[in-house]
Image (cartoon, rainbow, N blue to C red; front, top):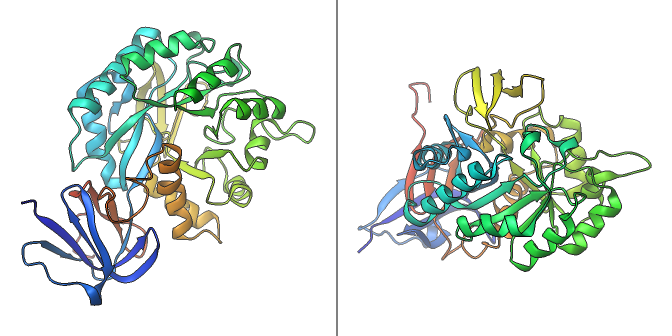
Length: 397
């Protein structure tokens, strides 16, 4: 019989509302019960953890992350993915999409085969779950390449995608592409028919073309404002379309570097919490010191929280998702913790069509929960019912 863990005396941000003084019972990988403390009946067989009024929220879901702690998805090695799944719970991330980048066919193929192998054979409770792959590039616009190596950018091609999806054993769940590239709209239609999420990114598309892409099946934009046709008073571009068209979800890197606080406020007022998805877009240097690192075979210089190529182009981030959450609350006065939960848990779960098991705290869903203190610092993270991270308390705490 599996032992249960019960979190007691907690402020729980549950699927159907806030429980100010409640409990969560986790058995196996699932949430077995949620309720108010006055209804709790002591289970002598369970491990009881008294949270003393601390906050419990759903596990965070990062749909756009390349790496952390010295490891990158493009390494194409099981050891690298093991590093990532073990590191992410410290920032409250309990599941994610392993994100690739523009590289050679062979390099991408190896990364995809490795991800599929890991997903099928190496997942285990107590680590962040790899939900699938986010294929970022190489079907992007060279004029909006950013840190995507231009030499490996190719035109959108259904047969090439199908080859990669076969190598990935069907685990590619999201594709970032530029719809204005020849073959872009045709690939979007194909991806839509096969249940893959399409995100417009690294794109110079006009507003009208974004509308065509939406009609073909696109539902999202990749890292809003970054490497996309910007807002102009005679051509709204991709950024304007993202802000104006309610149907589109928009990823947002809230580190205060990729997008300034004022533009984050504009995005929040336009899209509300129901259509924004906070991402990190982080690379291997996250959690490491200042220095020189690699991203897709390119030198990246990391200094004081900023990751740049030698020419000054931003090259991903070293952002942690819990910091993005805190930054969002700081930048936007009317943003609440419930709003942040939408942007870090509910919305990504909806986009990936996994709301039946992730994205909120409800009976029967995966026991992915995060315990926060009053300053929204991560104290504990449970990945599918297993304590995956616990903050070490100093003598001052």
